[in-house]
Amino acid sequence: MTPIHAIRRRCFTALTSEYSYLCTRTLSTSASAARNADSSKTAALQPRKIDPRWLTMTKRRLGRCMMFGLKPTQVQEAGKILQQITRDWRELIAGSEGYLTDATRRGLFRQSVAWGEMDTMGMYKRHVNNVTYVRYAETGRVYMTRNFATHIDPAHKKEWMNIVGNTGIGIILRSIKIDYKFPMKYPDEVTVYHKVAHDPSSPHSHKDAFHLQAVIISEAKQRPAARVHEDLVIYDYRRGKKADMPPFMLEQFKSTWELQEKAKKFWQQRILDIEARVRTLEMESWDREDAVEDTGSAKK
Image (cartoon, one colour):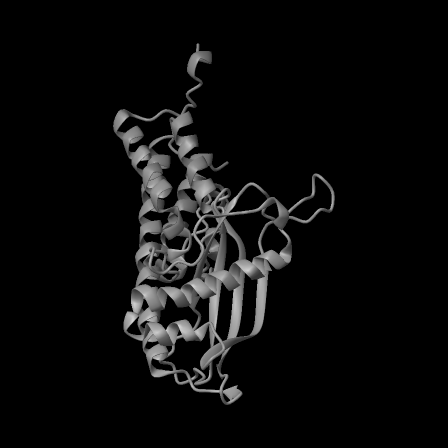
């Protein structure tokens, strides 16, 4: 019969074989998933996004390491990891998907959920009304436009501000799709980030339309509550018809796309770095042959 520690080692070997191409993926990162993985199927695994509960699982993994006892230097390392994910959790979650999270780019930031935004269907089944997520996305999109006008491209401030009006060249929402991940409840706060969904330089891009994606994050749960896909059309209100995207807008979208790609690679690498550090602590604590759980005062 194969010892359990040998099975763990083989599973980890299979997991680490994927690291060479993980600049295009982020890990599911559950330690139990790593142990239960079938090494014979590793080659068939496909790149995937970070697990929505990655932060929670990482904290639990560190907690388990501490339960089996850590040396002072290892405790210090665990503390540094916790400090990093506490400080950078929005960037690790959203930045790793290409969302730009700095103050000059974000839409809504820690906006309080109002009691009146919840449905009234049962005292214990209240949750934020589905339509409210559309409003969060809409407000975030308007703030994105204002950010271009105020912080990013002030040379075209007037043109950007007109985008959200109906006096000249503007944008019209043609369709919106929302994937609800879990029901938010009061009290909570929401943060909304938008990003350009496709490369504006691509020959497949439309001259008179573009797509945005948004993520609506629950601050209480520290994970996405909803994901949004918006299909927008450039519209000339004076002529009453669609129009080509203005050059100033196209140039800013191209620049934004490049920054998104850089952010994605940067924060995906940060996740891999954290993964490696957590895994090292696991192998030095509970996932070793002579591991014994530290039961504290109950220990005889």
